[in-house]
Length: 66
Image: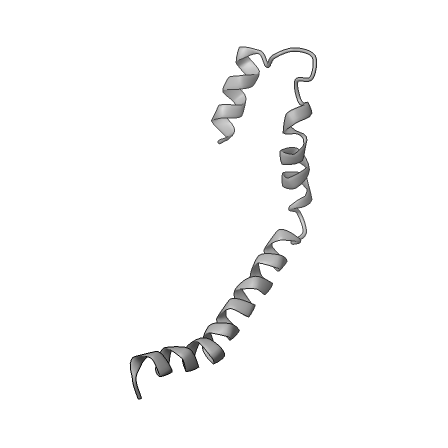
């Protein structure tokens, strides 16, 4: 069996199974309980300081969290 045929058969079976399991894992991780706060906080970043720039203390606190 040449290399191409082996790789093709592997990709058609085990590769597909691996990618499907990886996809399911990403979906479960994204919708896990407790992740809502993280995504809500990230989505609100553009609206945090709508009227004025962040103060130095707030900017340092945000940098410390990263």
